Structure formats: structure tokens, C-alpha cells
Amino acid sequence: MRYFSLVLTTCVALLAGCADEQSKPPASPSPTRSLVMSEGTSSGDGLSISNGNVVVKENEPGIAFATVTTPGQPRRIVYFVVFNHDRPHSGITTEGGSTGATADTFHTITTYGKASTVRYEVVLKKETESIEAETISIDDKVFDSTQGRVFLIDMKQNPPSATQFNFDLPADLPELTATDATEQFAQDTLNAIRTADEAVDAFCRTIETADD
Image (cartoon, rainbow, N blue to C red):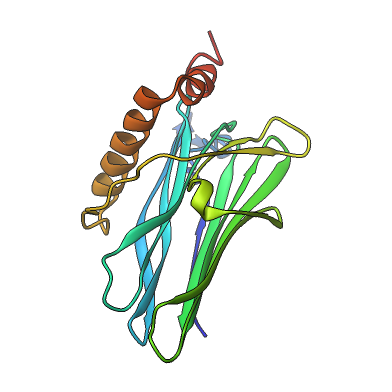
């Protein structure tokens, strides 16, 4: 199976100066305030699955989503996750792989001293190349995709809790290989969801006002 893995980590800058011709010790690491990852893909036999697609910025809702392209069908979103976090002390691991008639991808969110993994798997029928089965799971709990592909994950709960929502997600997906495009698309999609549902908007506001 071909796999592409992306691990989002904190960038560290070491600042050094000198005074009285004596060097100072390196300054303390300065964690970055945001993580934005564009879309990567793994493809095989007409089946393509994404990794990446992450936007995590301090005092803003975290966003992670995945896309799939099946033979003869347009690329589509398979899940769209919104979560709270303690950036800059949080991170995400994402990996996707495709081989033959199967593909899978996941995002693991690490924050508040806990971790939560969102995973998508798809299997095609060999004869027709239509979908035989697809699964969305969060921390090994399987969700019915017909009931929605949008999830709020409250990482402050122990264990983290996931709430499923059923919204129409964008069908015409832009190119997401640039971080600016990924961030814009993620924010536009979340804003539309927030406008459509008060519960999602309220959850996001708790993140935006966390330090008030």
C-alpha cells in the first residue's frame, strides 16, 4: 500500500545574541501559533485519498477534513471535523494510503493532554468500481455517514466527545495544494456551517472567547 504521511509539528527558533563579547545561551523555544497544511494525495487504480487539509490557529476553531476521488466520480469531502484545542501546545498527525480497491486516511488530534483519531476507509466493488463499503470512525466508534459528515469534537472532555451533524458540504472542490487555498476553503465551509446551525456557532464561539 502506498502511504503518504504528514506530521504537523511546532517550529522552533533559537535566538542568540552577544553582549560584552560573551555569547548568551539560546533563548527558550518559541512555539508557532498556527498550523496550516495543504492537501496531499495517494492514488492507485483510479482511487485517490487525501492527507493534510488542516487549519489550526490560536483562539480559532481547529479544522481537519479529508477528500476522496473514486473512479468516474468527482472529488468529495468524506469528513469535516471542527475541534477545540490549546494551540500552540497541540498537534495533528495525518496519513492516507490507497492500493487497488481500498483506501484509507486519518487525522489524529493531540491537545489538552489527550488524543482523538478520525478515520475514513473505503472499499470498491472490483467488477463495477462503485463503492462497496465506506466507514467513518472516531476513536473506534463507527458513525453512519448517511447521518452526516460534519463532526464537532470536544477535546476538553475525558474522553473526547464527538457530535455528528448533517449538512450539505461543497460539491465543487477547488485545488487545495496551496496552504492559502486550504485555509480559505476550510474557513468558508465552516462559516457556512456556523450560519446554518446555532450549536456549531456556539461551540466555535467558546473557542474564540477562551481567553476573554
